Image (tube, rainbow, N blue to C red; front, top):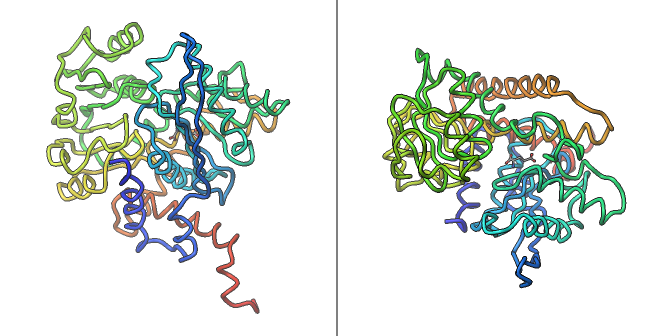
Length: 421
Ligand code: GLU
C-alpha cells in the first residue's frame, strides 16, 4: 500500500489541474521531491545492545520558503510514506499562505517498545544524522505521529550542540521552557474546530447537536473530541490502536481521556461498549473524523461508511478510490490539507517568535490562528462555489495557484515568453 501512496497522492493533485493555472514546468517539478535522505540511526539500548533504526527526511518543495513538516516515529514509516507526507505538506503550507515549502521526516520504530532514555538517544541520534540537511532557513521539523514537545526539545538541544550556538527556530513544537509557543500542542485540534465551525451550516444544515465518531485518540483526536463535546456534539464513537468504543447516547470524553492517560490506551474502557475497529468507521453518524493514519478508508471499506460528512484530521486518511466512492454516495469531504493545518500554522508563529526573539501570549496565538483558519476556509469554500468543485479539489486549486505563481517567478519558464516586456 505505501509504495502506491505517492502515486495515489499525485493522482489527486492531477485531478485538480484542469481547474487550476499551473505551468508545465511547475507540474514537472512537483512530480518529485527536491531532496530525500535516508539515514541509519544507531541507538545503544539499555541492555547494552546496539540497534540500528532506518530514518528519513524529505524536502519535497522549498519554492516559497524553508521546507516545513513533522517527524513521526512509527513502525510503518517508509521512504514512500515520508515522501508522500512531505508532498501533502507542500500543499498545506501553500493553502495557508505560509512562507514555507513542504517537508517530512520519520523513523521506523515502535516508540512504545523504548524506555525514556532509549527514546531520547534515538531522537538525538536521528537529529544528528539529518543535521546537515535541516536549518531555520532550509528545513524545519516539528511533531507528528508519536513525537511530542519533549522529543522536539531534545532535537533542538542536539542541534544547538552540533552547531555550537542557539538556533531555536530550527525545530517547532518545543516545550515552552525551550522557546516553544503557548497553544502549539492544541493547535491541530483548535484549527480543525475552526474549520468545522466555519463550514458547519453548509455541510450540516439544520443539525444542532451532530453525532460524531473519531478514529484516533492521540493528541489531535482526543482534544478535538473534548472541544466538540463542549460545543454540544454527541461523541458516539472513539478508537485508538488498541480499542474502539461506542455509545449511541454519547460517550463521556473526559472519562476516556483520563483512562487513556492512566493506562496508555483505550482498552477496557470505563464507559461505552467495545466494538470492532472497522465498525467504528461504519457507524451511522453525521460526522466521521479519521484522525489516525493515512489510508484508513480505501476502496475496500468506503462503501460501508454511513457518515454524511468527513473531516480529515489525519494526513491522507482517504485513498483516491475511497474519495470517488464517497463522492458518488454524496458524502461531503473536508480535506486534510485544510482541516489539520492549524498545527503548522502555529509552528509558523513559533518560528517567527524565535527568529525575532519575541514572546507571544496565548491569546494572540489563538486569535491569529482562528483568523487564519477562517480566512483560508472561506477562500476554499468560495472557490468551490465559484467553480462548482468538491472541497478537496478547491483546496488543491487554491494551493496550486499560489505555488505556481511563485515557481514561475523563480523559474525560467517566463524567459521563453515575451522578453521585450
Ligand atoms: N505534523 C504536522 C502536520 O502534519 C505539523 C507540521 C509542522 O508543524 O511543521 O501538519
